[in-house]
Amino acid sequence: MKKMILGLCFGSALIFGCKKESSTKPSGTTTPPAKDGFFWKEDSGAEIQADSAFWTTWSSGTGIRAYKNGMANFFEINWAPANATAVGDYSLTTPYGATFLKGSDTYTISSTQTIHITGFSSDKLSGNFTLDVTGPSIKKISANFNNIPKK
Image 1 (cartoon, rainbow, N blue to C red):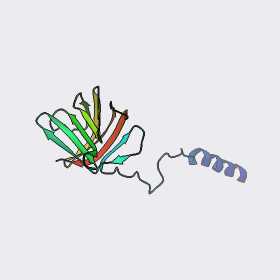
Image 2: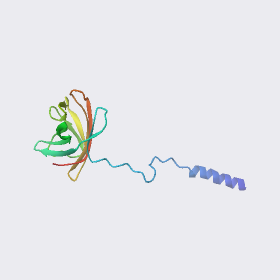
Image 3: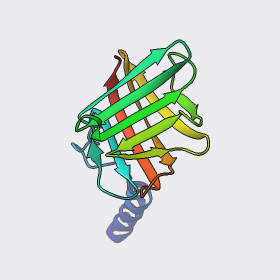
């Protein structure tokens, strides 16, 4: 009788005591927040951080300007309409949707591409883009920006 009760307890423990493996992170770990600023990669190179970046708006559009070492590395990204800061995708059109100056080299887009706005709060803009570019040596530029201020 004692063996039967132990067997029932053991069997019940197996049936009711088993639980599915959890896919959650261990307690106390978090995903680090995105770094503020403007960051880019040329082709599959190392990430580069701009010294200065801001977003701006005018009567017909919205844009980002980012600089590293003055004008040695300069981005001008433009999309329509004015104050287009809502989360969503916006078109970067030729010929002025995206320009990157690197030293004396100029890189532009030759077809319409997309910028993704992922956040806007307290007049600070966040998002990303990946562009196929034409120019002397770089073929792809990917960038992300987080909490860049308005100027």
